[in-house]
Image (cartoon, rainbow, N blue to C red; front, side):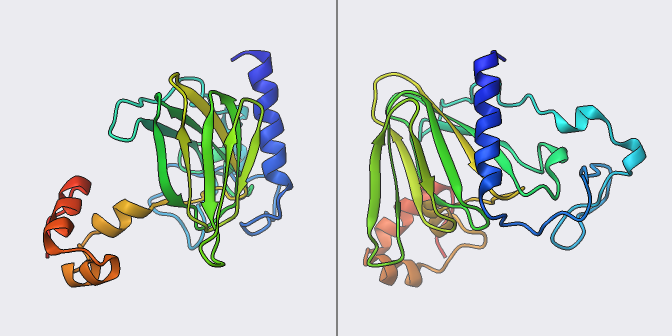
Length: 221
């Protein structure tokens, strides 16, 4: 990783940590997630014994390579959260890399446990979120070096509006921000939401419900 990218990562982690923590404050210096534990404890993960903790637990190299954008949306998110980076356990921060193919979309989604701050490293993005007040859209075109913040729990998205690939880096004030993709949650829930609910909620006919379920991988009920 180049020194400039390392500095950028450090800056964004610092910015993310500056938010009021969404997660509970830590009660010790660190609590590396014990990946050998059978199950997480309530609202957290079991700590590895301090004596077994190593410097390598605090390093993550998974963001060095671009994600595979060869999919329907043309985007890929590589997460550095407590699941993939155990050293983040109890520290209240996480990170992600988002790669976009030309005109690729990071589809409307929600992070229930964190505010997100996005840094555009490469390309041009159209990004925005929808507020709970009158469903107001707040959106901007972003260029390399720009930051944009998505408040916790609000629907948001990013679209690559350029003809070349784009890359963005995101910081979160939670060790595990969580993500709910809006369209997939509605049309590909498990078990499936009954057709009558979707037909009335979206004012669409049964045929369109079936088509949307097909697109997102579920059958009708």
